[in-house]
Amino acid sequence: MTISALQKARAQYQPKLPKSLKGAVKIVDGAATESIADQAEIKHLFPNTYGMPLLTFESTSDTGSVAPVNVGVILSGGQAPGGHNVISGIFDGIKKLNPDSKLYGFLGGPGGLVDHQYMEITADFLEGYRNTGGFDIIGSGRTKLEEEAQFDKGLEILKKLEIKALVIIGGDDSNTNACVLAEYYAAKKAGVQVVGCPKTIDGDLKNEMIETSFGFDTAVKVYSELIGNIQRDANSAKKYWHFIKLMGRSASHIGLEAALQTQPNITLISEEVAAKKQTLSEIVDYMAGIIAKRAANGENFGVALIPEGLVEFVPEMKALIAELNDLLAEGSTAEQEFKMIQKSHRIDWVAGKLSTETSTLFQSLPSSIALQLTLDRDPHGNVQVSLIETEKLLGEMVKTRLDEMKKAGEFKGKFGTQYHFFGYEGRCAAPSNFDADYCYSLGYTASVLIGAGKTGYMSSVRNTTSPAEEWIAGGVPVTMMMNMEKRHGHMKPVIQKALVELDGAPYKYLVANRDKWATETCYLYPGPIQYWGPTEVCDRPTVTLQLEQQGK
Image 1 (cartoon, helix red, strand yellow):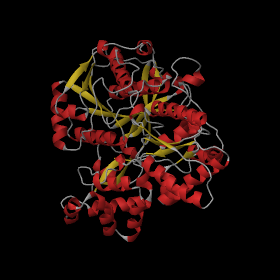
Image 2 (image 1 turned 60 degrees about the vertical axis):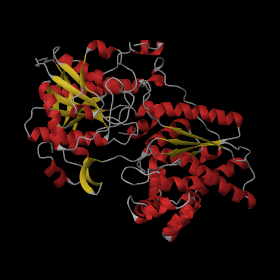
Image 3 (image 1 turned 45 degrees about the vertical axis):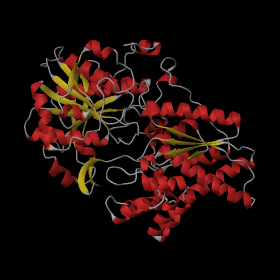
Image 4 (image 1 turned 180 degrees about the vertical axis):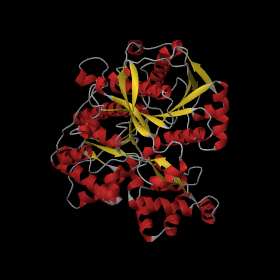
């Protein structure tokens, strides 16, 4: 493998561990747990893994001997910086338990378990992946482990390889599936433990015991560097408004953290839009108002951050999408009729089939977006909301509003736009020191849980705004994070997604400062991730974490 100078130097970095993981480890049982909601239903569905205690680790002088253990590992879902260090932590941890332990990676995600595609991860092979970004060591995939036939097929290869424990590295859905798998194997007395690790750059897998999901720190630092660069360009050229869409369909954690790191002029938060029941027109008026104020000060430039999933949080857009899904349902008479109509007449035809309010909204949209809403369907026949170019939708609508304001004498400036979408750019970056340390600790924690025979747990590393030596490692039962939600028409147990809390310190900090940031040019330029240098530059956690942990 050919590697860059950075990779070569970075390979020498030894991730920092919490003090409790540096020697022999004693597991301390805490209080018994219950799910965050729907306790009776969750307990009924998970009789073997419900109500287990919280676990914390302490150093001990009792080294003891542990038999060799074969462990399997799966990378599930989208990439996130630090996944390779989770695997490194698992590997080093089980080798410390017993040098004869083995680690097997299932290839291409959960599908590798079902299809029996795997490889043994050896020390020599792993060396090329330590402290690197990406999931290319074994690949990832989005196969969902939900059916008993899949569980049984997976058990065949686990038995063949004498694997006693399986670590699933993924987001909320993947860890929900991991818990279902743990329950199934426990009920069958299959002798296979299942442990999860919290991953997602979106930041929506977090709670009291999971302070942050891995990859979030690195990804937002990458986006913030790019936003800072754009802000410097905007402040230099002084002639463009940059509308930047950021990843985060279900929650706005990325947009909020990027705003706290860079201080742009406009930051839209989906959860705020939903709570205030804001209309698209109100959002456009808000943005146009800020642009007009800056223009009055001679500043015809600025930066706006827009979360990827914004349109799904606008109540009227949600209603429009629902009506379009019903109207153009696959196989319906209306869908057949729609296909026969000339493209130039389709918007008017659809508008005539919608209710009065949604029809008015539909016709107010830029024609390119309106057509996109009628054409791009997923395999279930629904609008592919993630493909909507929200940044262009808002940019075009703001331009129309500013033209109206100019005619009324309310806007005398100029308005030019540049559009950006930052998503894949941050998913596979070389992990920051924080993520390198945090991920290694999560993997090492998983190995301790395995050594203690635990199943149905997720690795937990807390107190993460302190130096790594003071981090608190342990395990949290996955059922503790669950509630019942409707998915595809059926009530299912799932890990509750963490949305931006409007009474939380990070959001309140944004609210306290955004009027100043809107009209003044208060840009911060965080620059690229630093791997060597002063601790305050290289090891700093996210602003979100710092604000959340203040006073705790």
